[in-house]
Image (cartoon, rainbow, N blue to C red; front, side, top):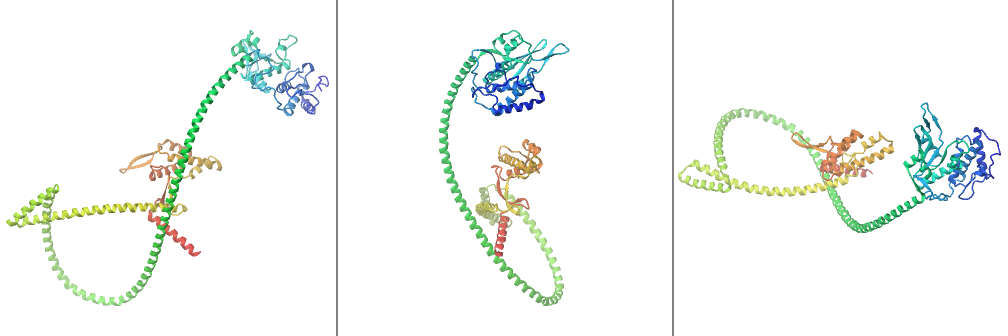
Length: 635
């Protein structure tokens, strides 16, 4: 059923929406025939003489152009009918099968026809106004481009043409250089031809022209004289679809050849990579097998060490029990002795009286003894004088001995000197010089003492070497015991006063607090974890060493380099608390493991903030063992 323009009278602008809905219902009910076949469509609202077959996209562009037209020649009823047709096409006939792929060249046009390339359209009869200066002005190209885009033609640019008088009333529409661009250009031309505003209608001299006229630029437009021909010659060239297809085929053939060569090269590389991958897989499997063996041996060794450590601590606990029993027995013995002392104290009170009487008798005796002590003091003074004289003589003799010792440069010189003195001694004996004989006897005595001291020194060196070996052995045993203590105390709570501290571990709490100030709780948690992981990697990096050496009281010390760029950026971005956490971890790892730069576990005294001794760790273990034993006894 076709539409006849004379069936009803025209409607007003306000009644267009209601009329559009009614027309849409008629189209849905099948009152008008729109679809000719699976590929072609027709407009039921155009007069019979203007009817033609459309593709789906062309009919949609035609209906949209007429429905949104601002021309006075279009009645309100005609616009409403075409708007209803747009609605029907989009909702009820959407996405039909397309006969031609837009990525391929158009089939329905002459492939030998010369067109302007890049694909270009021409728009004429654009409304202009004359200004007071006598120049003509018109609408901008962007406005016309947006209008054409809304109709589905997808131009890339609309360039208005100007001459010495101003806006010429014509413009050039540029489309994409590819086949979809040609499809859009041809749809653009057919849409205006269907509305009787094509190139033939513009060149016809039958009546006055109103509205825009448009078509696709061809060879005659390119070679024409005037502003349009001049502009087309500047921006493009004249080519046929066949020429472009041949050029595209040549490019595609060259591309396919290049791709084949590239695929062959890639296949060779792929084979080489597969061979390398196979070799790597075999090597990796061997390494994994060896690693498993080493890990198994390591685990067995660890088990042996743990068993020996457990036996060692059990022996310590047994010895402790024995000592405890011994202390308790000694305590009871001391209590018995205390009772006996109290009894003796009572006896001493009676005996003290007897002592007082004896003291009085002794006082009488002391008076007589004081007189004797005065005489003794006088004798002591005389003895002191004699001692001073003897001391002076000994000092003079000592000085002579020192002089002799200075002359002994070596052992041979000493022996020669002794032989000489012995010879002198024999001479002195015959001569009867008693004073020199005494000196030589003393020198001989000193020589004997020197030899004895040398023997003692050798013995001391041997003893010292033995002690060094024993000290090293004891130190190794202490280090093993310390490691066992660290392993046993790892699972205890950190609030205990003796525990295990991971030296160089980064405190994550300041990072969480800093992120909470910037993000919500969930995002802050993720951000803080990422930052902690990043700075833990920085701390492990041996190339990053933000420390410097300073001298304090003559001693060299390592401190944080305040000019380090990375630490300064951290302080600016996240604050002093995060900066302190990072520098504290850095100083710990530099003190306890500067060569490895990884976290190590250390026995720690938390109340005093220092490294705990082995004795403190053992006493803490014993205390924990007592508490556990007491709890078991109570239960």
